[in-house]
Length: 344
Image (cartoon, rainbow, N blue to C red; front, side, top):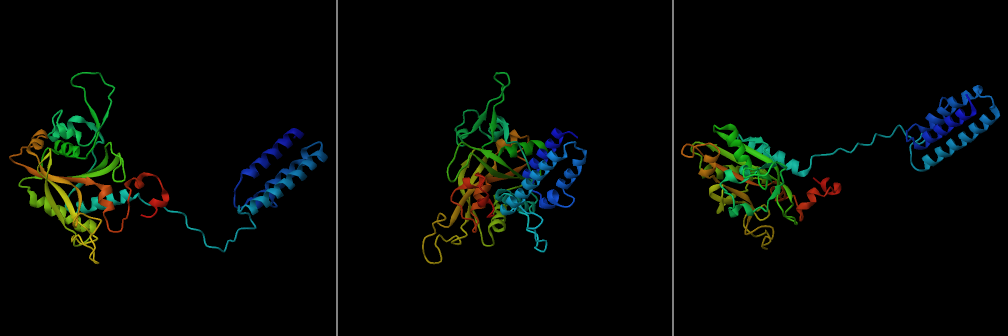
């Protein structure tokens, strides 16, 4: 071995030692069978042993200095490890709170025979609006401030308009056209997109859409499903109510409210103060209604033979209305702050 090759091996060993964070560092480099001893044994193959010995002496000093520095910095070495101490627990992650809420929602509706499905987040304008009884230019299309996506295809009258779905109601269209034959009981949960951003809205959020279609389905079935969900998700005693409203794809249509968990639906707290968390004892959560006959027809079902109901609302809002959740900015779910997420 030449002097230059020996010098290169010393430099490589020292560089490795500086970067190494092994818990047995002391033994690995300075032990009786360590890397320093192994390198020292090769000195017999070098012609200038005096110069090689000086290099080895300097290497040993450098390694001993490194050992001291690593020990002071808290890097475990052979001497600093107490093998009698119990092992520290590895950090274990958990599902995002919205994923937890999703699993709970799916399990509740599964008990009623609803099956979870997934339908596109980027969809044809016809599925998002047209087959849901909203013709081109209808003012109902403006309610969601929709994201439209440019398509690279050839221009023309029949060019498809692609939409970042502002609601999960396109799932109704896909499910009815996919199955073609009731009974249908589905829950479509996916991301939705609207051009809104404040403490109660994000441009991306999650919705779930429920759909039941069969013979002789009526409003009492819808109300029973909503009452069951309210009790199972928010606790015994929680009630639901429906108020007349208008959605283009349901007739009749309703807004859905759940009774407040803080005041028990009375609008007043136990001390007599007005409940500031609700509106006179109720929380508005979403919309529902009987599937419009035009929607059934557009999806290939006979409205004279079948009827159905649909409902849907945001998972973030559903989750934050639970009594143990106190969040004043819905955007906190998506800012990546682990200290916030680890609370759930």
